[in-house]
Length: 376
Ligand SMILES: [Zn+2]
Image (cartoon, rainbow, N blue to C red; front, top):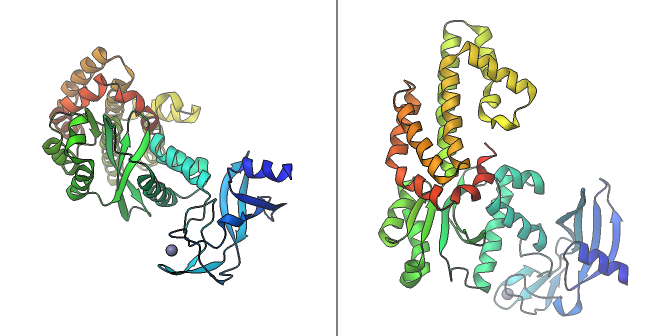
């Protein structure tokens, strides 16, 4: 009796009876359960008790939180009931949300990570596909919205987009900077979606918002400026770092294409291999990548200049505010006359967004976003 409760506790399962624990064919741990009596025969949608229909597809598995380094699954029957309102549906189970293949505890952790770390980190740590993370975020948020009013008491928020299902679908998400929690999500990335959020927030609560961080896109910045006129708008550091990384990549591609055209096969091959060395933060470079980088320094001054420009802009998020702003202005001056078209263009964008970038530095948003930035 006590041992079964330990298993339920380890996997974060409540209101279940643990029937059996086994090691599966791929060394995964499989915990067979059934809902306690009170939780049985309930509609998966409304949880109303309903008459049984059939055994559904038989046994089903839900991915649970890993136990140490071992994958774990919850296994149970997936019987169906006939609900008065919803017809024939799979029964509700206390350990998972309807239609999910993951346990609640697993989904809650994934959603938290999606908001607080980089997307590659979530997918890698939780061992799921990135598109699965998007689906999980939607489910967690839908449920949370029904239970408590997540939009009350918001002061500092971030509005962002995340891609979902291999980039074919986008979600607009809103994060509470004070708690790090996802408070709103909806399909779409356009002005209408942002306005929908602001409608739900309502006029009174809009007035309470002191700070909004977002990227430079007008579909967010436009409605934010219209409806939250008193809020400080910060440019999310993550997006600045992303833009500078893109500018660097453009230079690398140009140089590479030129090398190929002039038949310099050795240089072309070297440049291709240098991609990651140029991208990564210098403190994370392997010995081989460091060697690549110093090779670039000697063989291609244009590309190395682009690299230094990227690094300097990234540095502004690691310095105290005063020094950071000075460095930002130095960067703009340098980028303007660097004769690298992608950086000259970026200098114009950064100049136009300077107020928002400075606001992010002054309000310390750079620290919160550093976990994003370091993945680049
Ligand atoms: Zn129902």
